[in-house]
Amino acid sequence: MHVAAPRRRAAAVAAGLGCLVLPLVASGPKAVASAPLAAGTMAAAPYEYLGWGNPQKPTDVMAATGVKWFTLAFVLSDGGCNPKWDGLRALTGGSDQSAINAIRGAGGDVVVSVGGWSGNKLGEKCSSASALAGAYQKVINAYHLKALDIDIENTEFSNATVRKRVVDALKIVKTNNPGIVTYVTMGTTPGGPDADGKDLIKKGAAAGLANDGWVIMPFDFGGHSGSMGSATVSALEGLKSAVKSAYGYGDDTAYRHIGVSSMNGRTDEAGETVTTGDFRTILGYAKQHHIARYSFWSVNRDRQCGSGGSGDACSGVSQAPYAFTKIVVQYTG
Image (tube, helix red, strand yellow):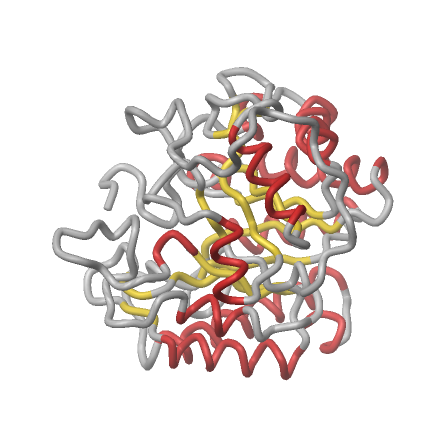
């Protein structure tokens, strides 16, 4: 566990992350693979962080679980209004690009996640919505993306000016990239988004942002009642109400514009554990309401800890390999 950067939200700012540890393909850098229509669904795209937590080879995960989509984390600012993986590695020509090529070559595809808890945030470093949209566009162009996730946390989330900048930038992105799917991922309370989260959603509605999924991370609650599955359902109901109110949606449409990104096993908070039973509760809810997204943090952690195992690389609970991924992949939208 990173004290300054919790497991879920850790951006790769630790020493030694300037080079990716995962040898994903034998050949050197090559052009970005074109993106065929992947089987499966982007609605079930668990996070994998290729610069952290002893990551598995994505194609091995695909073969073991049937998952086709991944949300790859995190793109950050390089100190200015320019996107790089972990704020360090170029978008193209390196290991990250090779990973995406390999996933696509195996019939899958990716959502790229911008943000996280730590590191320099593009939303703060880009001085205007148009500049921020330009930074997002560089990421989209690098991989011909069908979907983009903005994981807005920490200082980027708590600043009202930045929240509006992110929303306005995403509206530009939606205009310039017809058909692209956008997710906005944020923290939550057991009752739903906090004041900043509700404000973000309201700003989106006021700007006319047709966001595909407002997504919450229902963990690190600081206290809750009942199981983590029931607490997640409560948080999602609060999110649905916030989206419904801001956008004037009916219930069915509101449900289809919310999503969840849980955390498998022990979370960053002592005594808080999300079980496979909780994941099945969330799956039932997702299927009932056809929510926009069911993801989790993270594939890196979807295995039992060995002797001396780090919480960055394992769940902290007794489990079969990929037990959580195998539940999430059952969600088809």
